[in-house]
Image (cartoon, rainbow, N blue to C red):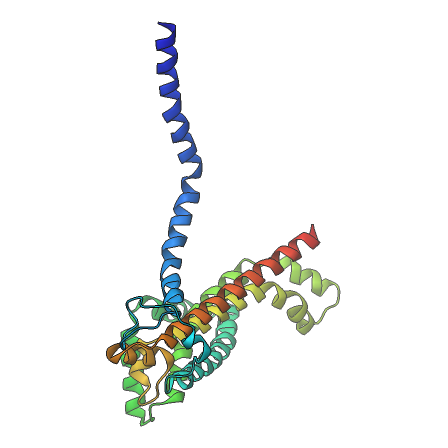
Length: 281
């Protein structure tokens, strides 16, 4: 009887121990599953960048090859469209970051008429489908007689990136402690010195996150670009056109390189932040 009771107690404790472990680690497990789900497409793209397909489409694994990596610009117009996308994304990031930062400070620090209306207009591009803004801007450019090309794409990208910058910077500015600026003024700092040495460094993480988000959105955009590009071909448009007649392996090479650069930037940023925190402590 004693042996039988001990066996039943062990059987009861074992499931309970497993359930307790699952409850303690359920968030970590869910996070790892989500991370794996997000990274899996990038891994597939990375693997197929070393493929050598027999036909025009790079959808089935044939054999290992580094030919595409040795000649990433071997496909006509690929690097040209990539350079154009990088150029547009860079200028769109600069324009959206400068304008968005000024708008964010104005909305967070000042009270003026139609302030709530401006807030609503700022968030509209984030709420509405991209095709609505794309068609609206295309109609505006047509009515104004503006020729589609580089400048229409740039204006359109600044327009839809602006909302994301304002959101990121405004959240950072509203969380700032105003006593820090007041302390700088008590120490006889001029308004410009206060802004450059106190306000701007505190707001810098929000500005940087808005700029990075703008760059990623601009470089990756297809819908708004397609409506306002005319005969200009950016990298996403090149990929879309290539998918209809044959996908070159070099597209996977460019995608893998962009992914690795993004991961490197994140790792460097995390290491720099950890180093700063360790120095302060």
